[in-house]
Length: 345
Figure 1 (cartoon, rainbow, N blue to C red):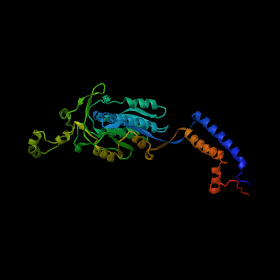
Figure 2: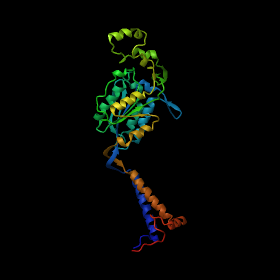
Figure 3: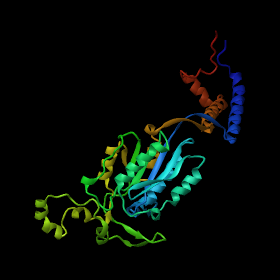
Figure 4: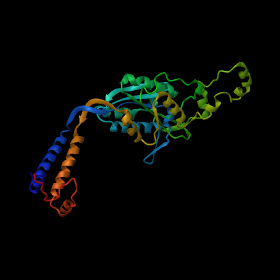
């Protein structure tokens, strides 16, 4: 029985070319099929407080604010998510996270999601305060209500405004790790001025220390004994009382990595610092964030793999009679029979 016959080369070459044309034609019709698929469910939450307007990012030679970088990162993550994935959107300010978009399938609603993210603005904030812990805990409470496998990606610089005494920070009441996801640190660790923006998003000035101290007293007071109050009376009258150190730079903003790392440890979330917008796409599609579900699957990538293999077969058979192929046959590679060799049964 012959295993290799040279007169079969032309026939196999024609067959491979025909199959290749059939696959390419099928791909034009965008074939889809419902199959078990690896998808991702994400609840993207953006801090829209005024410290997020600090422009300490660079992209293409232009300065970008933390809020702009967060939105750019989420929009790139949407493009990286496979069809069948679901996305919900939220915004944080003061003590609460508000869910602005319920979970929707990412491919069918891509344009609407992208437009919603692009329109997120600091002027949508309903209060000027920023209690990060409350907002993060609130987002984690929402996640199970939005979906059993919903993950949270919370974008914030971590700045508490007005500054709070660490002794009075709330404790996380949920189970650490029950909701997976990331706390994303925005901005640089160096202090920057917080801009005041007008209705056209132009800088109209910067917050100063006196303005912040007018309302920056929440959670700063210490509970002291009578003796301690008498001993510290002079210090309090001179403006050096409890909390003054925390308020001294409250008009400036920097990435509060220590605060965010503490919150990530308490909640079981992972902490990551955002350096460039493409990073969030890798985090959003990580293996640990996968949710398996029957989903509408695009078959074109599978057709492309088979088409590439057929093209390789066609090219190989086309040059089967060339000098270099004859030389390759004489090398007698283990996976390719020598030219003209016959194996008789």
